[in-house]
Image (cartoon, rainbow, N blue to C red):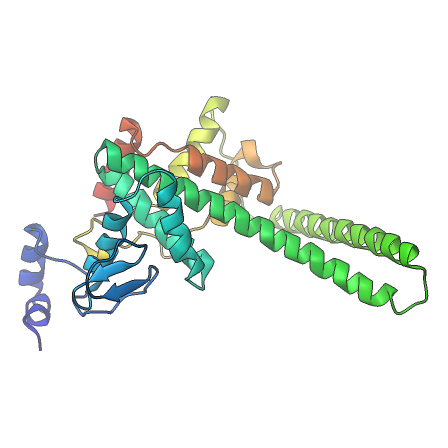
Length: 291
């Protein structure tokens, strides 16, 4: 058994190490991490790869991602992120990882120059999320059109008639799917109407956006870096969950559709200024409350 395991198996030593900042949840096993960013073992080269003299352990690897990012300026930051994003298979996982890592560093504060670079990186994450959503919607539209085309071309028509018919049916089918989704949402709304839901009301309508921002900040609360791998308080708490809370329990949002509320949550997430003094104080207060 390693010395760390021996000490951490004793609650007295474990708590004492935590009090003096000597406790870390990070594994020091080399290579035991998810390789979101491509890296090489060897002499440093001036390219987008991360370089290490030997196999890095998790914390060193993660810190080097941002040390490398800070080497770049302007559009070179975007090219650096694009390179690794392209080479990582699970795009959503990559963006989720970056979103929380960047958010934490912005809250901790890294100096004006570095914060500007982190904000550029966060803007890139937001842009990529929107692009992925657009690609999914376009793919669905193309699949619908292809399915219609396979049905229509089995019957004899002129080329012009076929193209026009395909477009017409594809448009109608897309509209029909939207109608089905709207009806499904209405059905869910009717079903939840029988549940015990809240009717929270605010005195000032100008505070509605602030309420959404508070829920987002609560969603992002995480332990200090020296405790429990800086894990989030919530194992799962998504924008869809925030939208559902608003829709079911706040009078001002009862009439909003869930997808509309999700967009509002996304908008407010982008508007939160992590370097704002009030935001910093609230974030620190929430962290102190839980940890």
